[in-house]
Length: 230
Image 1 (cartoon, rainbow, N blue to C red):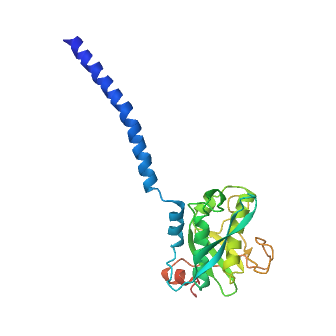
Image 2: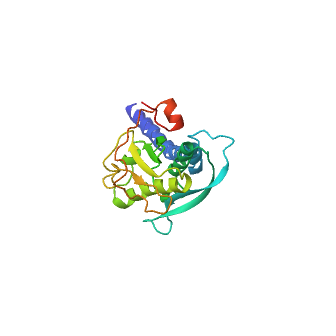
Image 3: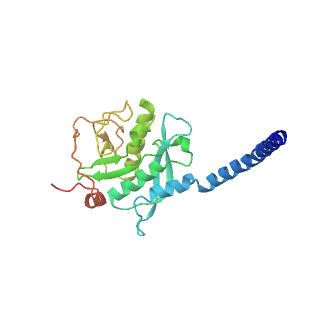
């Protein structure tokens, strides 16, 4: 009796192993197929990011220059012209182009900013001083290195230069805080020049204000991008 019982157990185990060998590859294929269906494409991700600022139906569609890594030289930036509906308001316009920059190019290898980084707020003062506040991922996910960090900062500055002429200088904050460096090299304690007259981008001018008070983000000041008067 016990011998028959052992035989049945061995047969049952053999059937289970055979069934698993047949079923698991099928299950794996179904999971991969489902992942491809549910995973958003890069273009979908770009659309979601560029819609972070609600588009106005009256915003004209214009040619916009975005600065990503050059396909010919990974140590340099290259302009890419795309069609984008842009607001005439410089603050909203800056948010729109920076969100598009964050979404990245079609070729993800040419992006300059981490895919998980986000623009939290943007302020523009009457003298042309701008403050762009990014999520922590801009610092924690950016590759550490003078070249990669400089490309990241320059891509932001040059994209603003090409599309928002009201911006003359730029301060980069990380989650509302001033960091010493982006990821260990590029200095974030001062303003970066955004010179529409051809001056060297990214250079820090000693006569620029070294500090700027940025109020907490509220529905009122975040809509206009101008800090509320105290």
